[in-house]
Image 1: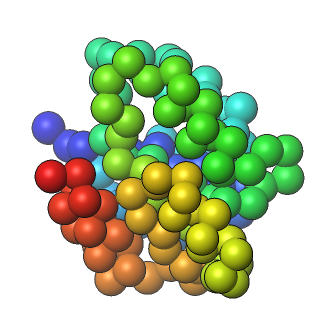
Image 2: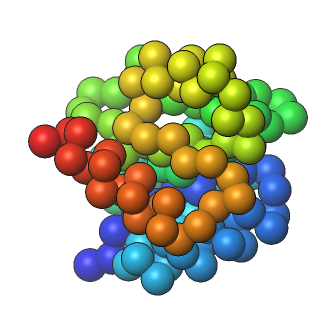
Length: 128
């Protein structure tokens, strides 16, 4: 059975690229362009078909990726899916804040398949 990924980003070009990489890596992908859409997607899946991965942009127009992570973390009754942030802002302050949030990994845009694979591997190792 394929693994399920939730891709959260308001940039359609990034969604296309990331969906291609994730599909190649064996994921079925549900895309959301906002935190509100992402929360709805998670709620609609429930515990029956939960996501194994959430790949989420840090900065979006209506709400930020860390807000999604915080909401999911507070509502979690089980372990959260692997959570990877994607950011075009690799300044030290942003990276430090993301590390403090306890996300599993951070990838810097533009996304490459190699960086995504590394993020998945390191995130999974971190959980063991």
